[in-house]
Length: 396
Ligand SMILES: [Zn+2]
Image (cartoon, rainbow, N blue to C red):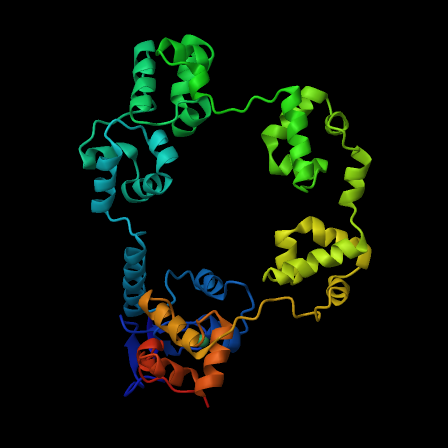
């Protein structure tokens, strides 16, 4: 794009956009990168994604110069490298070789989803990745003859892997499905492989007495015995109780627990509710509404039913409303440490992009300015800042 330059040094002629700068299509100013802030403040974009909107409106692919683009990409690559999330062709091939040659993509996706995803992104087709890694391409899954099935089970056992049906299925669905066709129940396949099913079974067997004993144990441990809570805590046990007794109430009754009292227990007293909130606070957990609702929605719902508002609940618990969040203690050491950590992990350090407001506030309060805090932590502020386009000047 050729533009008339107004804000480039020596530039009052026509210039073409180059590697170093891009021109805002709306105001014709040159930038290293057109920022979200610029679009929102100068041109009144109010979308959630002003840059995307800008790109769409002018059918552009980038809103930043090639230089910025390259720098950003390199920076990301370095970060991913450090975090072990960078999948180069070479690394993919190495990991594929480690994963073993006779693999269908479906099996790989189950065992190493990240690797499988990287394969697709980098090579496109599984066939091509196999070729690059020097594997024989395996389509779909293994041909499961009875012999192959038994060999696979024995191999798993030799390698010390669990061979109960659920574990095997989690590793690869093909084997148990094939075994079912060839041998019937999984136990039969195990027996054919010379393995005693009883020894590998992980599933608990719930007898009448077992269910009753478990309910009593839960009651004695002070656990919530309500329908929903029990079901959430241990689906397997709950299902067994229903199978054995027909209903949860019947199971409770059989264990000598009054179902009505369990339900009444769920509708807690005002005192109980307040002390539960206090207990959370004493345990050092945040008790602001959002955090509490995440951690214990039932308690929050009960409080709201009874006290109408969370503020009122907090008041009753003796906590000043709005003070439920745990204050981070930003000691000078912690401020310095956070800045250094951010630097070490390659995270953004310019004041606009540091997400943790508490950190910025504490640093500014203690050192007078963010730059001063950076210097104190041994970081050069000018390296941190996104530099402005050459010839940048504030509009009059
Ligand atoms: Zn503009």
